Every structure is written in structure tokens, then in C-alpha cells.
Image (cartoon, rainbow, N blue to C red; front, side, top):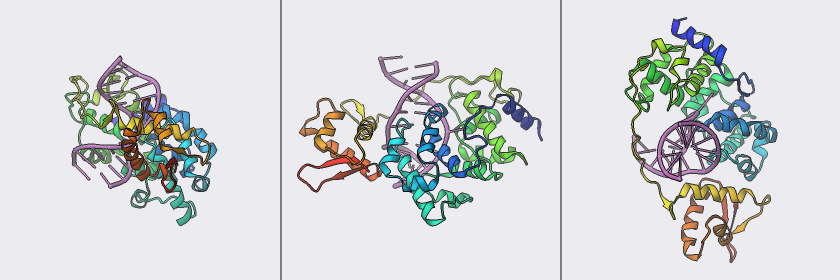
Length: 298
DNA sequence: GAGGCGTGGAC
DNA sequence: TGTCCAAGCCT
């Protein structure tokens, strides 16, 4: 084992986070944690993880559940289409392989909501396969350690980092290695204010000094309505529908008034368009057969 | 491959 | 107070 590797492992034993899915052996519970963690901070997942699993303890129970129930249990997590994809995944796995998750990257990536990172994370965490993973934490950490970054926001392309991650990957304890690197990136080698004094490999780091904070490039303005980004309105719509009793629906105009303080008929076209997006994502159902169209969670 | 997709805490 | 950011995925 290299000096670099032993320094990382030593730090992990001392300072790694204790998380409910660490050391978990049930692939389904690993799957749920990984999907929840996509672009979502650990602290947020910690609040929701156990309640979700208590409600849907097995892949079969999740497959049997109503879509609307799954969406409700996703409250507060953001990116609600993840709930839809996870539900579809459960359905698929329950009906094609008796609820058993596949163990290859390709087969996992064929499942809804599973991309390259999540597939490899499941292989490493659930099946103890020797597979290096690179999430944004590890990408940032390796970028800084092995290349000289000039600003805090700079990162090497994922391809470059993955090639390096493969070289650094230890012959044993690959799972602990992956977890250690993610913890380092998340708690020490952070995006805004890295704690280099606490870093076990600071002496190896090519960016140890000299990273500058640079004014962020202004992001492109996103589509907005009355000054509020449309994704916020979409979130409010889903949140409002969550509050309805199971299976209940709402007339469109009533929903409009609930999410826009001054909703009027002139805004109906806009609302229709937003609901169309949500419908395509499998999050809502618009019943347009009667005289007054109604909407509910899918 | 760029852009869309929530939510709430941190700074 | 507003902007940034977070265990990515999909089209």
C-alpha cells in the first residue's frame, strides 16, 4: 500500500462519518440511499431515509405501492422525478428478476434513474465489487491533489479523474476506499472553504497553496413566471398536491390559486404547460374528460 | 452535450 | 439578502 493510500485509510478510521447505510448489506437499502444522495446533501437524506424504508422496507413493497404514496414520501428531498424513477425501477426489478438487483454496470445502468456513478456505487457498496467510483467530491479532491488548480471551482474533466482513480484504487478494501474519499471531499476538501490543515494528504497536494476564490460566472437566467423560476412553481404544485387526501384531485383553477396569489384565467395556459411537464415526468395526472379538468398526483 | 430537473442550509 | 451548493440522471 502506498503512503498516500495509508494516509487516507488512517484518516477514515479516525474521522470518517458514521452513516446508516455504511456497512449495510441489503442491496435495496443501498439503492435507496444512493438515489436519495444524488445531488442531495447527506444531512437532508438522513432526515428522510429511515422513514422511507419503514414505509417501503423491500423492493417488492415499493413496487406494490401507489405512485402518489412514493411521491409523498419524497417530500423535502427535491428532484421529485427521482421518486418516479425509483418506483419504476422497483416495478421493473420485482417483475423481471424476482426483486434481485443486477450486479453489472451495464445492467444497472439500464434501470431508470441509475447512471454511471450510481451503478458503480451499488457494485461497490452492495456487492463488494472492486470498483472505483468518482462522484463530485472525489472529482474535486483528486483534481486538487493530482493537478494544480488555480481556483477553488476548477476541476479536471471526469475522464481524467477516473483514469487517475483507477490507478490509485487499492487492491483490497475498495469499498472503504471509496467511502473515505467521498468523506474527505465532503468534509475536508470542500468546495468553498477547504480545511487543508485537517487534510491527511496535504503534503501530497499540488493545490495546497495558490487556489483563488474567483467570482462565479453569472448563471443563465432560467425560465421564470412573475419573477419566480418555473421549477419553484412546479415544486409548489407537487407540494400542494401532496397535501390532498389519497387519490383526491383538484380543479385546475383551484390549484392555480393555491400556487399563485393572483391566479386568473389568463394564467391557465401557463398552468397547463407546467402541468404538461409534470405529467410527462410521471408526477401528476390531469383528468380532462369532464367539464372542469382536475389534477392529482400520478 | 448543454440544459432541465427541487429543496433548504451555508455563507 | 441573494447566491452558491449538494453522493447525478436524462434527453
